[in-house]
Image (cartoon, rainbow, N blue to C red; front, side):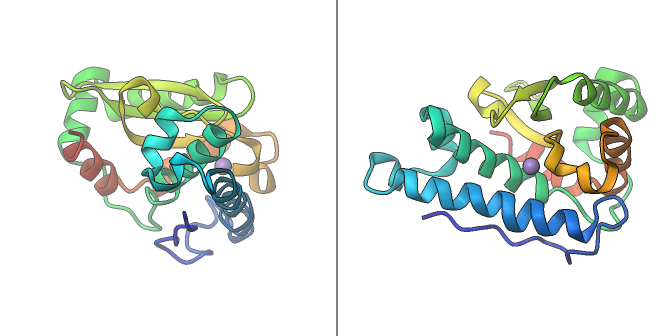
Length: 193
Ligand code: MN
């Protein structure tokens, strides 16, 4: 049985970048729906006892879609903070090494989010040697399916931004940098093995 994660901040704490209303629907309705669906789908199957990440790696069809969306949203919702510290740490050092600057990295990340056709996610992930890669994942997919360690993600499904930004996906993605908690990204990077 999977349960809905609790948000590590108040529902109105990320406004105006993400409104309380968007969080009410995104976390309370969309993510809750994926959790309920997955619990129904795995009941009485060998997947019932597997960790979420293993289900994402092994399942197909509706089970993959619902498990992937839970994993994606769990990583997404727990990477934000109302007043995050400035980007720092080994992951930021690696970003500067590969992209030249944090701003250049942000530009490419947002561009890949904007150019993703339809619903999906843009990700920063680590490879086994510690190098970083930005990938686009369609639908419910997650970089763990490619053997990568996911560190940071922006949700480009319309339900993530339509109430606050309507069709302005690029504007929404640019605003999200204000609430990215780089301490969480750093922790994920340090625990990549
Ligand atoms: Mn979403």
